[in-house]
Length: 126
Image 1 (cartoon, one colour):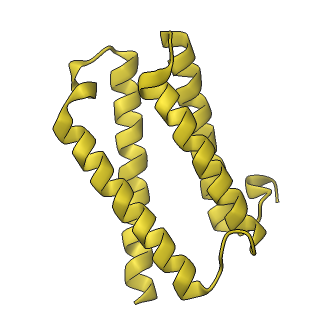
Image 2 (cartoon, rainbow, N blue to C red):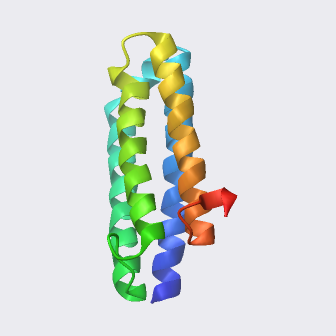
Image 3 (cartoon, rainbow, N blue to C red):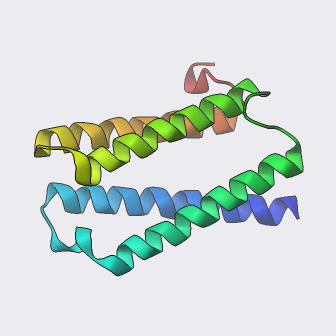
C-alpha cells in the first residue's frame, strides 16, 4: 500500500510542478490559455490527489508536521509556495512582480524536494 501511495504522490508532484511551470510560462507570454477553466480544474484535481496522498503517507509512516521538523519545514514551504504561486499567476500587480513571484515559488519547490529527499529542514544544504 505504501508503495502505491508513494508513486501516486510522486506522479502528482511531477504533474503539479509541470502544470505550474506551464501556467507560469503562459503568464509570462500573456497567453489566453492561462484562464481556461478546464486547465484550472485539472490543476485542482492534481493538487487534491497530491494533498490526499501526502496525508496518507504521513499516516502510513507515522510522521507528522509539528513533531518531525523536516515535515514541518515542508508544510511551511508549501504554504509559502501557494502564496507565491498565487501572486505569480494572478495576484501580482505587474509582470515583473509576477515573474519574481514565479521564480521564488520555483525556489520553494526546489527546497521542498530537497527536504523530502534528505528528511532534513536544511534541505540541499544538509
